[in-house]
Length: 136
Image (tube, rainbow, N blue to C red; front, top):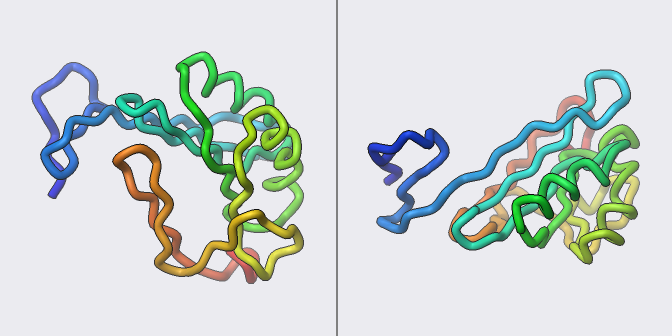
C-alpha cells in the first residue's frame, strides 16, 4: 500500500511504511522527440537511467548532481534512438545494461516479463508489451 504523506514535496512517498523520496525526471535526449529518464530513490541514493539515447552525459550529469549512484541502464526497446548512449552511460557510471534478450543489443542483464529491478527500496517491474518493437 502506498500512502502520500502530508508534505510540500509531491515526490515524497511512504512505501511499506518506509519513507522514501522518489526521483522521476524526463530528460530530452535529442533526435525526434526522444526522452531518457532518471528514476531513483533519494533516501538510498540509488538510481537507474532509462533509454540514454543521444545524450547519455546529460542523464549522467543529472544523476551525479544529485549524488546518485546509477546501478542500471535500462532500454525499453532496442531501437538506436533509445540505445545509442548505452556504452557511454555505462563507461561514465560503471552501471550494467539491462534489456530484453531478443533485441539487437546484447545486454549485461536480460530482462523478462514480471522481473523486478531494485532501485533503493523501490521495485521497478518489467512488463513485456510488444508493439512498437517486438522486444519492447
